[in-house]
Length: 246
View 1 (tube, helix red, strand yellow):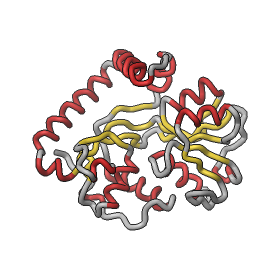
View 2 (tube, rainbow, N blue to C red; view 1 turned 120 degrees about the vertical axis):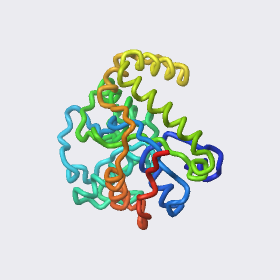
View 3 (cartoon, rainbow, N blue to C red; view 1 turned 135 degrees about the vertical axis):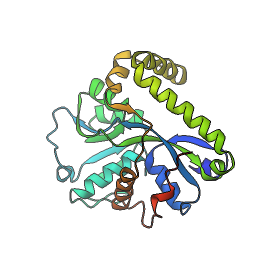
């Protein structure tokens, strides 16, 4: 989002919470969501033998999230707050710890955190490698959206339109060819991380993820409510301009 503001990039895939934060910061002037991308794949994972069931049970406990203010961090804080806990950015009745995903896994294995609210494939890794179980799953919630800078959309609408058309065609291909898509994902992850990726992990994670071109304003309104409850947003302009179909 900082790169969007700096005119360093024109289009990006990002979580809905950062997109909404950027929209609010710019008073609705800088950011437009031009398509949905993925729903689901985010969850709160606890130990397999854990007795934690409700937000109240996390009083005095620690939950790791990927990054301060990111989509899962906001969801976690809002869930705890809705359950009656007082949550601040640095503490409160329960401690939410922004932690890099690889570190979440090791901390969870060492029982140094009581839960992890994260996204796939880390949800599946916590289950398969650390004996975790899912307590809360955000099955229908947007995880990633396609965002354009408002300036680029205004100046190069036809280019954005072509990119979105390609994105939608790819989304449809992924839906119709899940096995081949998973192979491509594994190949790209190996290229990026230089680590061995088990096909079983990607297959397990894939079941929670829904690729989609749809994005609805009422869902984003819920994110605004969550961000307000978590203390990240106060005054947000009307979302009427946030979603724009090029």
